[in-house]
Image 1 (cartoon, helix red, strand yellow):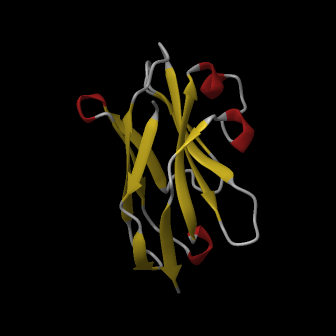
Image 2: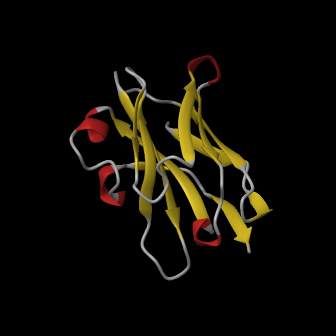
Length: 128
């Protein structure tokens, strides 16, 4: 069965960096879209970045463009989210999610309902 395990969260000061990891297993789709989402207290879960793993195409929310980088290591079945120049408003629980590759390029990767499989989340706290 599909499993996603996130790690790498923590507490940093504004301007700092973190790298989140999402290890996947049990994927059966021929192509996959893997997304990173975040959810702050009382807010909806929103997509921040996604990668179409077959082609390596990447997608970013405007709020993180230029600061966050999504990448993959196929040998390790791992997708990373490198987060630089962190701001207090980046504080949230970060989740990775996976579904078919078309979820990436049909324009809905940023929506929670697009993905069927989720990890347990990892907390990121940025202090000012």
